[in-house]
Each structure stands twice: as C-alpha cells, then as structure tokens.
Image (cartoon, rainbow, N blue to C red; front, side, top):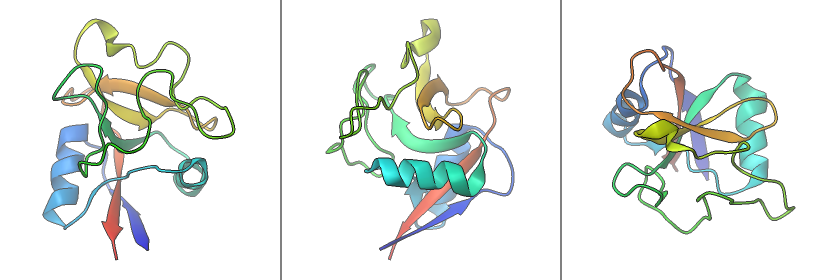
Length: 128
C-alpha cells in the first residue's frame, strides 16, 4: 500500500524531508527488514531514510511521526540482526541526528541533517 521514489539529486536530509512533504510524502519509514533490504537492492547507494532524533537526542522517530518501530540504539530486526552499524547511532560528538542506509549490509548510520558535505539521495514514501 505504499509507493517509493528516490530524489534525482543528492541533498541534505532536511532538504529531502521538505521535498517529500511538498509532494505529499515523507522520508521512508522502514518497518520490516524486507523493506530495508528492498530499498538497498533497488537503489544500491547510501540513501536518506526518515529516522531522526532532531527533537530529543537519543529518541529516534520517523519523519512521518510514527514511533511504533524500535529504531533506537541497539535496535534489532526480528531475526536478531542489528539495524544500526557498530557504534551507531553515535551522534558524532554532536548533531548527527538523521539516518541513512549505510551500505549493502543494510545497516544504518546517523549523520548531520544539514551539512552540505553530507548530501545523499532521499527515499520518499507515499501512502496509497
């Protein structure tokens, strides 16, 4: 019941979230490992997902406002595999508040939301 799209250009997380909202969507909410794997397999590049802790450090939520999925530090998929790369989310000293799929293993990394040197394509999700 959802449609996904990738941005044409790389941009900051905040710009990608704003672009998704302007089109009536949001950055992807990954509720299952299958969705996570599918996203990587479709686009095969680091991509922004909707996980963020911008409002409260350490309290991860999705861009669409849902909090039902376990996405905090140490979170695992039902098969026991980790969602976050080793040592992540780390907050990188301060301000790494937005998540991306890091590599083909499907693990996530937290990075800066508005740093122009950290531009990635965003994965938009639209409810049907």
